[in-house]
Amino acid sequence: MNTSEAKRASNKNLAESVCKALEARGFHALYAENAKAACESALEMIEDGATVGIPGTVTVREIGLPERLVEKGCRIYEHWLSNMTPEERVSALLNELQADWFLTSANALSMDGTIVNIDGMGNRVSAMSWAPGKILYIIGVNKITPDVHSALSRARSIASPPNALRNGRKTPCVTTGRCMDCNSPDRICRVVTMIERAPMGRDCRVIIVGEELGY
Image (cartoon, rainbow, N blue to C red; front, side, top):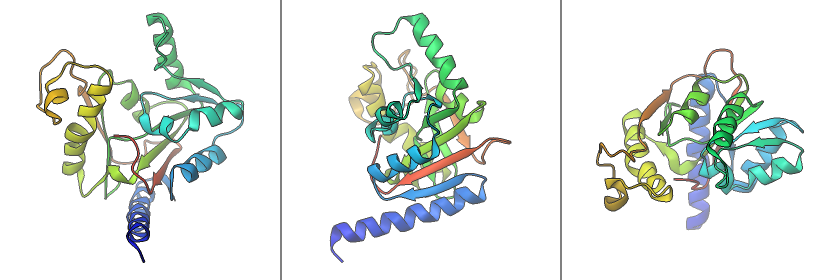
């Protein structure tokens, strides 16, 4: 077995182990070997013509899912579009929350199946906690951490600095590359959630991908 084969096998074993932990916590979880397989699995789940909310997630866009959903006749709501007016952005945020499906990723996922996220506005994490539609997380194997403590650390010090940089924020972490627990008005780490179990009465699904995706 060469190096790349060993890495793929190791990622598969890790992902399947975490899938079992997620299943025990009320999620429907599956493993996808790569981004293409993850995209195909998501397309099989989401009905033709469904409404789909896509918040600020690099991973979902990285695997090319929004474009494929449009081909299925789905209506996509996303507040990320650069030419939106403030009113249009608020409308998109509300439509994301109320869509048939809410597609997102995670800043970190602990081995025991706890999903950790940090938000600036709270729109993404609020929809993870409650929304009338189904939720699908697509999470790269690079997001998996040994425990909740390391998941919180990853969310702050690994995921947040490049996110702040991408969004043009003027925070200390943009300069240092690590969380400084700042009090900057541009701070994007404002609302932290730990999803320990699938929320009551909700169809919650997770695809763990055996590749590095997102931040």
